[in-house]
Length: 115
Length: 110
Image (cartoon, rainbow over all chains, first blue to last red; front, side):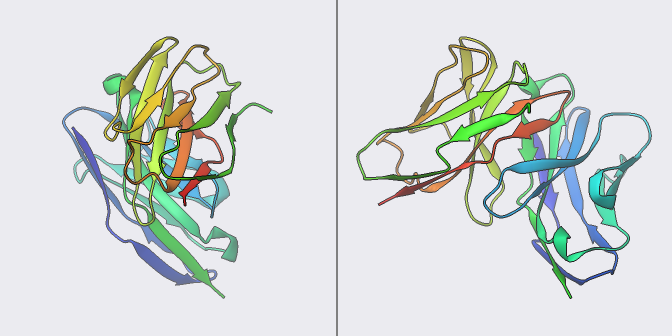
């Protein structure tokens, strides 16, 4: 079984400030890790993914995330946010080569960027 | 452009009616999924299909049905047995691990 915990339901931040959205997971098998972004009344878009290799992953729109196996975390960071980054962010895990590729999602973090 | 197309975007239903949500993909992906999203909650898996003519129940399949007669199509029917169908429904297909999502269908029961 897999589970994902996003530690903050809402994160308010001022424009041009750095931000970190926290994600912890649990799984009995190796997993792939993902961050998705959702704008109002739209589907989810992939921000970045960790499949293997380097634990620091860079994604679109200046976001990056670091996989920490010992702490079972995959926190999302951006050094300087813009108003347009205001959205819902979801962390997800998918079991490696098992479980029919089903993804388990966290409850989401609402990022609000204020001017 | 390649992607997932969901229709309709908005749908209103009277109690006791069945409705079908369409999901079409041109990404040549084998696996497809239906998720339900409620405010303040993550995505919950309704049904998934790994190959044509085969599908499995997800975590909240009661009151829903699906079919997978073609690789490109994975329609979801919300039946009258679903007690609380008002929600945002998302269809997805799987690439190399990650999911590709449609724009969603918002169903409201009047």
